[in-house]
Image 1 (cartoon, rainbow, N blue to C red):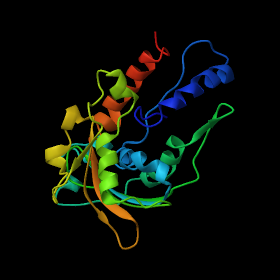
Image 2: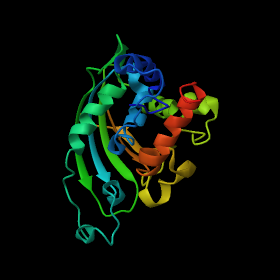
Image 3: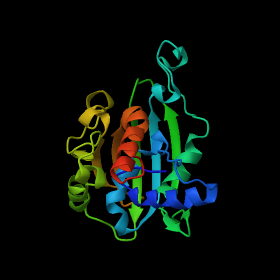
Image 4: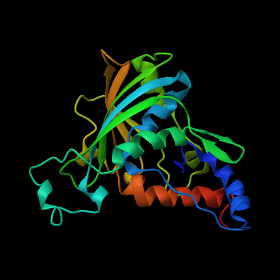
Length: 235
């Protein structure tokens, strides 16, 4: 389960997978759930500061359910506060992404403790998250912004065709990111963050946004394939 900018080292599990399955070629690699691709990338540049607790409420587009407004009339003028199985995946999968490879197995991270609520909202594309986070070493707001702006991964270093030039885009404006304005940044492959401030219960809070059918689905899978090609797993 790979987000190319975050855990490309997990590709090493492929050799163990082949041995376990008794095959010399082929493998199974997947992308993570689209709901967490808005907030996990924003937390990752801060991971060495020891995130201890994360609360994320996601506001997810109808295309995440394979729907349009024509096929989902119940969403018009409405919000549905339940997406089956989404919260469980949103709380479990980040720990696997941040996990370590031990004896051919991905061992999930033990922290941060993550709790989520996933809500379906009446927009076509774009998953937004309201995120609260605490750390063992509390960063200043400026440090968070600096880390977001400077963060880069292997896809950017390799200049992979589908990779955004800048993975995380920070907006200082109080009303950004907005789904309609910002979901298509860098062909929908970048993540947007904004509304960063201190919180009374957690260390920081912010809002983040990703395009669920591009970065979160088809585009994210293509980027994984491009990385696997670049690393020699696909001829």
